[in-house]
Image (cartoon, rainbow, N blue to C red):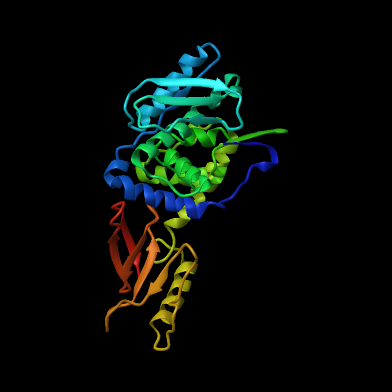
Length: 304
């Protein structure tokens, strides 16, 4: 879970998996459940200085994560030992929580909250029986869920680069954490930017937010830019033309795709990803309309 030095990846190499994780989260727990997480864990709840007892402080922060994710109150057993990873958690039916933290956190208490956010989210997903095949994808699901449900901003804040020293916790790149946090901010109107103590974390959040905003400005959404609208109109004409051949005209890989509807005389349809939950939505091509995502309930203005 710890990455250092030149090994820190940047950009959006895992974006397809991140989007799949958001869709899977909504499908598993529903829009109504996601809506019960409007407030993130607050900085005051995870602050940890050298005057506080190590084990009592770590347990206090672990309880804050348990409460944030609406898990049952139960005994929390925390130990520190030398290990390769930042932390591990024992995934059991409960009710107790057994977490091991890397020994280095004895002297880097500031990041204990980030490590616990990831591990407690593992527990939450395990008890929901929600997972992805493969270790990498499952860890990306965990990071995405932690960030989207209000615990994972700490994972981005743990990203720091100071001369020869660099650190990142989690499997997402810093910019991907920023992308997920921006999606959460759009949903709940909660801006995490003032909470970042790492300048690099703030920059990564800004980059992720810019990428997230692109999702809301792609055709056939009415807020798309003029250049994208021109390209969309060209692809639509090709898809509607008398000599149209399969496959139908398609926009960017994570954008729109025209689809021939079944049945004679049925209108052409266009599919596109919902900017909130990333599930693909299909609507008829018939000009201005509003579409509501059946998964996350977002109402979208479209110009098809």
